[in-house]
Length: 290
Image (cartoon, rainbow, N blue to C red; front, side, top):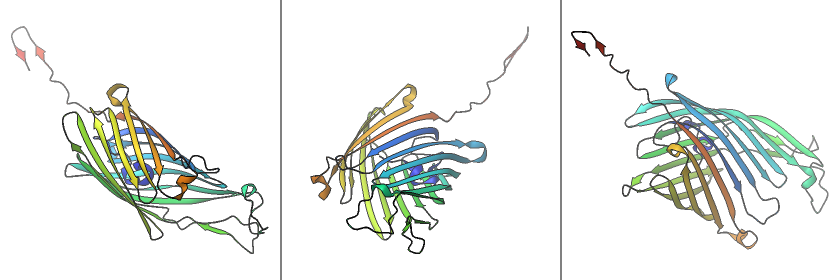
């Protein structure tokens, strides 16, 4: 399931809805069930359009645990909005902090290595991302780069022998198109291309909707997993959405893991539509003026 704000700050205040909305959401991913220390991730976000300055502002928090490694990011997001054609182009940065930690007590090497920490090590750095996002009535497309600052983290106990970890750049190209099959059924195929250190991975999905309330889809992540996705909207004006996906592992990990689970919950507040003032009717004993 896709969270545009986390991958592309250009989508701040725009999103993938038909109209700009104020949105709050959370996503929880439980990866590789059955493997001790497997990744567990949580994302929290909120963003809103500000029409007076043609902009959107937001915030997102990402928390990830994978064995002895822990990563936490807290970012403020901004995008400037330009109306182009029948859509909106958002361009902007995301600035925040990126904390990486290593719990040395969980490391159990066969041989004693003095470089490895014997306790917890943690370092905090500034983080910068940027992106562009275009949302039209029927489609969206985005380009973004995460972790533009080349930060290095040292988890070694020995100052003379640093153990460096560098957070790599992430580049994302995203796109999707909305088809109205019938009055009740719609279909939205989408694609994500991710590049990290010259390694490119593709993800594709197709989500079908019924009456803009119930959703079912399939997804594929290159050489990694195939997924089944379901979701539904609820509350007045379909303001809330719940989604769930299950990943079938396609690599060698399928012998030790039963798969991965992902849960999504969002709440949206539609942008208010300002109506023109009503005509003032003046009544007199002899005339009725409008």
